[in-house]
Length: 317
Image: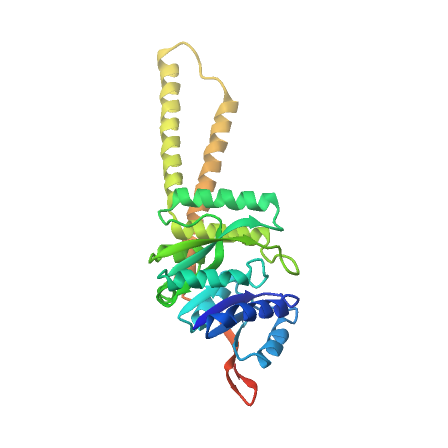
């Protein structure tokens, strides 16, 4: 069976088209289910999902108790999926469902992870495309995990790949990196990304920066090493300045001038110290979040269309 997982957050205008395109794409592939995770929507998305589930027993709905974020919603869908292969796709139709048969074909050829690589990114500004390119280039340089460039969360995972991810309970989740870290046989499929079908992007700049910080802190200790190297370089610099000052004071007739330069050096050292504390604090905050051992998400309700009786989906709170 093929499972498709899609997180839903305020996508009421997209749901009918998403359901139509997923159904028409998946039917020729054999048995399937569609797991839609409502991540605390407030625009009536859940009611629209219930209407769709009443007429399609392939739908399985998971409603989270509040908005836990995109990566947590994807994780909830992966935990709920029961297929031999699981396709992860966003609910805004930027990733076309018509690419899924290509992903499934590669899985049937023996690959455990099949990620979709973006050729064109219609509807996205050059600034967003450029910033994403810079981020992935930086991430490739500072981490030992080979994370594919121009690949988002749109991918297929075999059952053993999904089970491997289930053994990784960290809270700061970057699923693109996690699916690369688990290894197994992986390959990429190129595709052209579409513009949003309706609505606006829910990934604001602060959320993008938060995801970038999660990715860097989860897969690299390079920032800590860079801070250490910077601190060592400044110690050497300060020792050199001290040695030069003592030499001028005791072995020459010149007096040391320049209170402005002294203040500048003091401010520089203070700024570097605060920056270093900030970088270290990011890692300490990650440790703090992990030690609390709170659930990654909480489920409010599950609606299982495949367990329908008398035409009504089974609902569990």
